[in-house]
Image (cartoon, rainbow, N blue to C red; front, side, top):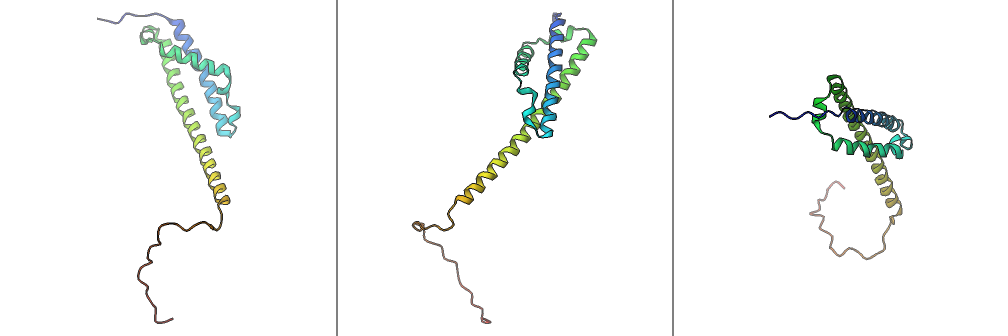
Length: 144
């Protein structure tokens, strides 16, 4: 039993076109993150966000039989664009994780510093309820 072939080249072309636009947007984001200007990220644009949602829906409903029945040139182009999109998306995710970790680390360091500065230098409250432990046996030095 062989799988029936589904010929839907316009859908494949549409996926390729959307992936190419998303690759360009992600590469711009990566450049902005490397430059330290996350405000210039292109993926924050509502048009790119809508494109991402549409691409996700299209890719989720994509039938692999369409790619298998496509002409060799189109199939090869689809596979290379998909591989490049996956690589760029992984790099983008790594860059976002780095920025997130760095910013969280800075916030934690600032919070610790503020807490240290606001802590009283000497406490006048009641002593702790636990008794202090013995320091152990004392050793006397006969030289002194």
